[in-house]
Image (cartoon, rainbow, N blue to C red; front, side, top):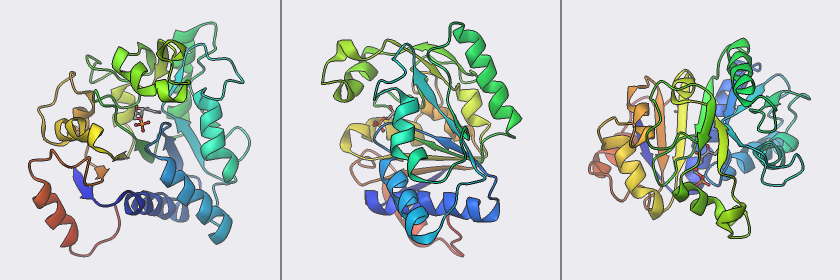
Length: 260
Ligand code: F6R
């Protein structure tokens, strides 16, 4: 696992660099897209490069991590709509190239199975952007999730609903109780994981992710088993890392730096 500690703007540039390098090498790349606050600067940077530097997503595909169950099709916080607003509509993805699990399906387990097939059918995810919850979730794999789980229905923890109430008029009761989420096993199949975390409220989750024992109680710790995982954190999110100085030194002195 590689840990990079830098200001948020630099982290976004590094993540965008990794995605751009992939797109230039293989235009038909498969991107894993996260919602929430953490990837927003990355999406801004990618949209800027599309507009100003001609970076094209025309042959790429995108798969979202998760979706709330039951939010109306036109609800602005439905992740399908959020991802359209934050990135899909700002670049040149082909129509239908970005998919997410269908939180409005009549048969939710069938929708989850169909989503797994769609990801596999696209050849799997090349680079997966991730945020982390204060409770250590990635996607919506809440504490206790099987480390081998696949896309399925999950119940959101009270903590996650409180954390996300800021998107719902600060009213926790408006936050859905259930979601469809890629499983930890699904996420681990992606070829490169890039997790972004900023702010002191993420410091304990980041410490557990990087330095804690692998445990379903901190689901993100499964990333320690991934052969190519990058953790991008600012000083505040890194503030509880025991080996913070070592990670800084490693990044600054990396020989033959080729990007993430
Ligand atoms: C969103 C997702 C979640 C968020 C996490 C952090 O698609 O999968 O795991 O990444 O809840 O959210 P923010 O970035 O808003 O702090």
